[in-house]
Length: 300
Length: 306
Image (cartoon, rainbow over all chains, first blue to last red; front, side, top):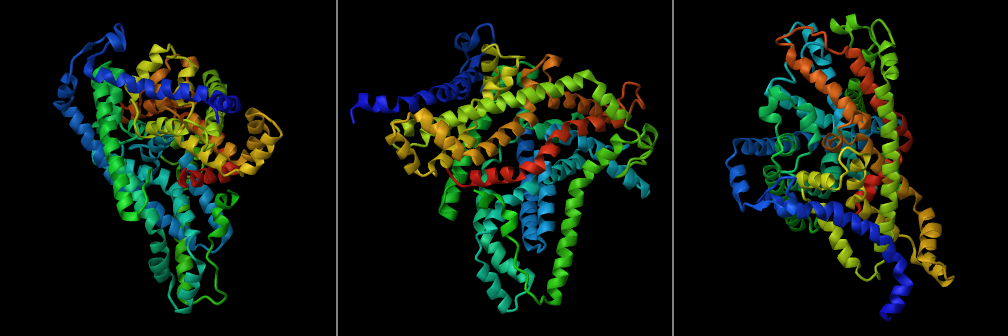
């Protein structure tokens, strides 16, 4: 087909693409262009192009900064603990839901368990303070009623970790069951019937049929999680964290926000952001490779 | 898609007519444990609700757990008569509606051409889009961009940077690709334009995915907080989340202060904080049960690779 004929027939499709492509170039590639300020002494008067080149100076400064290592450590620590606690929860919950025979009870449970996923971190933060507050929080009220001393869930770093992790489980466990339940619909029902014939109990069936049926899903989700080890959302640690527990709650994303937008050290903050993006990319590509090796399918 | 949407219907393990004793014990234990989990999931909401409906004295003395003590709706009266709160709610609703409409228009405009495998240059455009899923400039270059475009402290700073989610776009494309081509070919033979085909044939067939993605965009905007913190200064442009965040800071301040100063006069009553939390959560809780199946189907669509 000649080009002119092709265009006459298909120009409308390209017309539709104009604004979306303009969007991607401006709001996704525009910031990528701005990454160069990691190598420049950026200020707003001179702008991105005219600010002076400083080479790797800012990188040197960041890699000598104690706070950078602290936030990197905290990011890895919080993500790792989250993986230990929040990863098995939806799997267990999905299996429990799968074993429920009464359809109405199962539906009701699902409806309720999904709710926290739709609550913003700001609101969850508000709830956390009411529930875990030291003097008048719900948990401590009951704890003190039993005659114990109140527990500083929000102001002691170690207890704060518990609060952070429990909140994560509460928010994500229910919603996380969806992918497992979907995978479970793919299991051949005849396997269960055969197991019944052989007189296998429920736990045996879970162990020998349900879990193997979820193996691929578990491995894929685990790999995705590992791939996101250096990536941490801003809102959860920012809203639940506070000055008293900064030694644990300060992570890369909040660090970038603090030095960049609160202190105006744009260059340093960009360097930290770039570090996170590059290492994150390496992790994801590595995870994709691992997934191809172990399940024969990539995650990308 | 509906099949995917309603997994709860399909997964029940068939009960055998004569179940053994071990079977019954398993069921009882399972349902009991699950009930506890569901309760734990709900208790924080119930507690906040109870606090919001109780008087100050029982709250301070720690008497309120799951039921209101000394009922009062005073806190709600205060929240609803706080004009800044009502205005913030109104602004958030408007913001969410405009954002969702623009997002869907853009996502459809991008998704339809890119769903055609014979489109020249499709591969290039797809690579351009997919790269952005795995690498981004980071928040500082984004902030500088928004500032250079003079969008700071306008509602457009909360709309334009998030217009197309590459993830949702991929979902859109794969949905369009599953629509039988014969339908479109028939329209093309009739000589209708691509715009007409998209509007009259494709979109009416895509209502489920449109509903699902609209919800995801809308919830994302409703709950979004970080960009409001970064880009908004004027109190009249505070979305609900930012407004609420100030209350939480107030909470934190009182939590940290208690060691030194006890009972500051500046402190907001607990019931007012709780009522505000309920106020901001309610819109989501009201729409959620009706739209649940769309949410679930969205996850399923996302899990099927594009």
